[in-house]
Length: 221
View 1 (tube, rainbow, N blue to C red):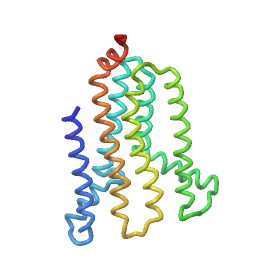
View 2: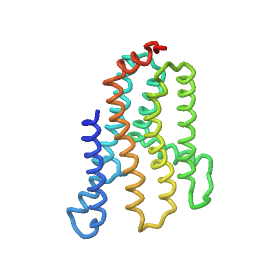
View 3: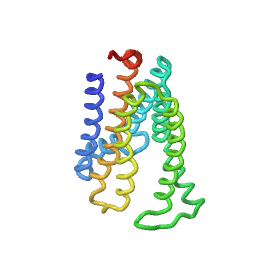
View 4: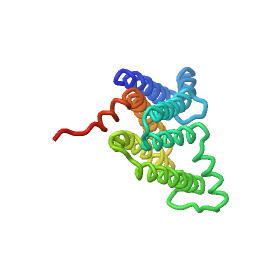
């Protein structure tokens, strides 16, 4: 797992670095402009976005394979969670749903945010309710070791939410000259969170049976 994490982190940080440095010289050099466009962290169909989609899909896939090895509701929840993250990234769920919700509900402009931003928050809330229900179901039928599996993914998800929701909302009210920095914090932070999740999911897939077997062994007095 450490080798997989090191490789994935190097690639992720490399993409973020290329985007950041090329953004500084975007207006001066043609090569920098091409690199900045192709490695844009938030641009659909860019190298960064495709890589991030792949990582989220791999996380969901490895968690699903782990669930097929061990009967654990925690793994069902995590598979659904990262499947939802992959769906949101690849289908642009919260942006598209946010636009439609903002228009349909005639959401106002307040505190520097408009219908699109409030619609996105509402779209996240709807998805959050669904995920919360799956989590409650999984926790109600938890088995020994489930908490230890969920805990590290929870930390990754907190980082993802802080960058994907918190930094995203903050980005909308920041001055234009901080745009590059906010993109790195927002989209780069998301990439790092998903990278850590994919490496964790691979580690769970490789060790899940041994882990749960050890957790189910009776403790000695």
